[in-house]
Image 1 (cartoon, rainbow, N blue to C red):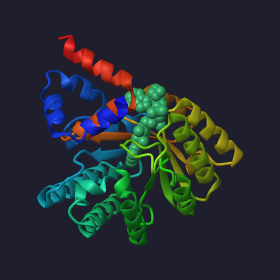
Image 2 (cartoon, protein in one colour; image 1 turned 120 degrees about the vertical axis):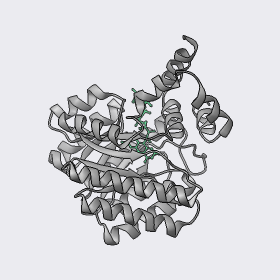
Image 3 (cartoon, protein in one colour; image 1 turned 180 degrees about the vertical axis):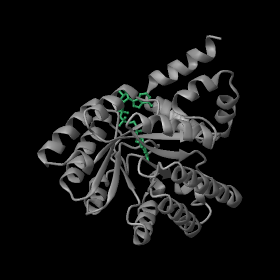
Image 4 (tube, rainbow, N blue to C red; image 1 turned 90 degrees about the horizontal axis):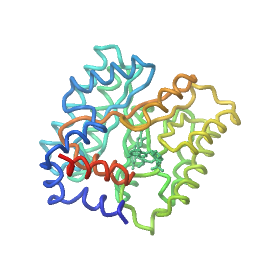
Length: 305
Ligand code: FAD
C-alpha cells in the first residue's frame, strides 16, 4: 500500500513541490544521488572505479514531454561520454539511458534516433549503453528499441523486470550470445494483470529468470541488493561454470556499499548504478518506495530540525 502510494506520488506535481522544497530534503537525497553536475559524476566515477568497481551513469531527467529538453538530455549524455572517453574510463564506466528522457512520450522514432546518437557517442568512447526499463506500458516499445538498436550497436544492454508475468519469456528471447541483459525486480507501479504484486512471487520469478540467463549464452547483469538472490546467483555461476568475467552484479549508488566491495574483493564484477542531475524527484521517490525505512529516515530528518 505504502509502496503504491509513493509510486503514485512520484507522478504527482503537488507532492513533487512539497518534497522538492522541504527543508533538508537534500541530506536524504544525497544518499542516493551522486550530485548535480558532470563534475560530480566524474568524481564519483573516478572514486568507485579506483576501488575496483564498475559504473553505469544515469543522467536524471526522465519522462520528458518537450523536444528541446529531450535534445538537451542527448547533448548531456554525449558530453558525459566524451568526458569518460577522455579520462580513459570507457572500459569501466558505461551509461544507462531512459527512452522517456530522450523523447519517447513525444515520438517513438525520435526517441530511437536520439538513443542511437547516445550509442554512437558511447562507441566513440569505447563504452556501452543500457536502456533502462520503465513503466509497464512502455515495455514492448523498449524491447523493440533494443532490437532495433542492436542492429548497429550489438552491445546495447536490455533490462528485464522480474515482476512482469512475461519476464521469463523476455529472458528466453534475450539469452543469446553477446546479449547484455540486466535483470531487476522492477521499480514502477504495475497492475496485477501484467505483474506479480506479491514480493515472494516477484523473488521466485527473479530466480527463474536468473536460471534462464545464467544457463544461456548472454552476459547477465544481476541487479539486486537482495542477499538471498545474490547467494543463488553465486551458486548458479558455479553450476554453469561461468567465469567471473561472464556476468556481473549491479547495485545502486548508496545502497549496500559494503556488499558491493565485499563481492568485488572476492573477484566478482560489480557495477554501481550512479544517478546524478537536478531532476532527482522521481528517482528518489522510487528509492523511498522500495524500503519503508528510507521513508521513516526521510520524515525524521524533516521533523528533527
Ligand atoms: P528488495 O527486495 O527491494 O531489497 C532487498 C534488500 O536490499 C532490502 O532488504 C534492503 O536491504 C536493500 N534495499 C533495496 N532497495 C533499497 C533502497 N531503496 N534503500 C535501501 N536499501 C534497499 N528498476 C526498473 O524498473 N528498471 C530499471 O531499469 C532498473 N534498473 C536498475 C539498475 C540497478 C543497478 C539496480 C540495482 C536496480 C534497478 N532497478 C530498476 C530497481 C529494481 O527494480 C528494484 O526496485 C530495486 O533494485 C530494489 O530491489 P532489490 O532487488 O534490491 O530487492
